[in-house]
Amino acid sequence: LRQKLLAFGHGAEIKAEKVLYGFGGGAANTGVSFANLGFKSAAIVAVGNDIFGAEIIANFKKRKVGIDLIQKIPRFSSDLAVIIIGPDKDRIIFRDDNVKNKLQLNRKGIAAIKNTKWVYLNSLSGDWQKILTEVFEIKNKKTDLRIAWNPGQAQLDGGILKLQGFIKQTEVLILNQDEAIHLATSDSKIQAKKTDLNNIKNLLPIIKNYGPRIAVITCGKDGAWA
Image (cartoon, rainbow, N blue to C red; front, side):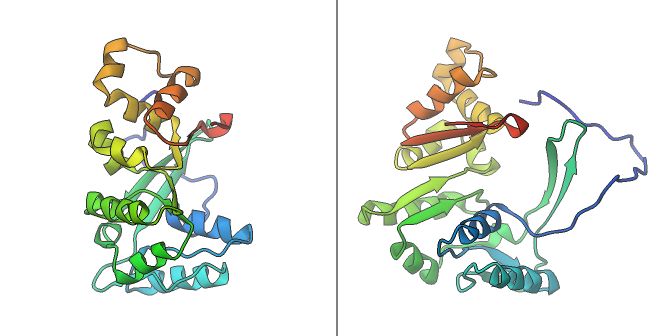
């Protein structure tokens, strides 16, 4: 899976050409993007009960993303990501996910999902299988609910055997190329075939055959396939 590596000298002090600070994360980026397009959106996320958590909530309000479903976790600092952009413009992310692990699907979140037409699921950690099961159980009872899903590392590490039941109920499955390869290589049938998974024309049909109505694979600066 590690087709390219970016290395740093041990003990080195490296000057950054440019540093930018901002807000992000899968749920935040998606919620803000949909709000920018004129959709009504709200984010089910966890933040620390600290100054950064307050700034995150204020930014959601400024961006017209609903904040009623945000969970403040006491005695924890808000999560942080440091993103390094390499020479080829691709990125490496160092993450601190302590608060994210505390996220739960509470009664307010369940009620909100029951009242919406679309849910966008992003990377989940902590008790992610419980959260996924709860969301898809709502979908089974509410036939007009549609799910777009960008699984995270914890889900992909679970492999296709743990994920396929959920994928079959997903309208739009979104993966980057490495994530798609990760998922496909967890499948013993694909391993046996020794298919060239670096070729998107081989990889995309494999992901589609797992059952989503639409499969999307993003390829960094080379765009995306669906």
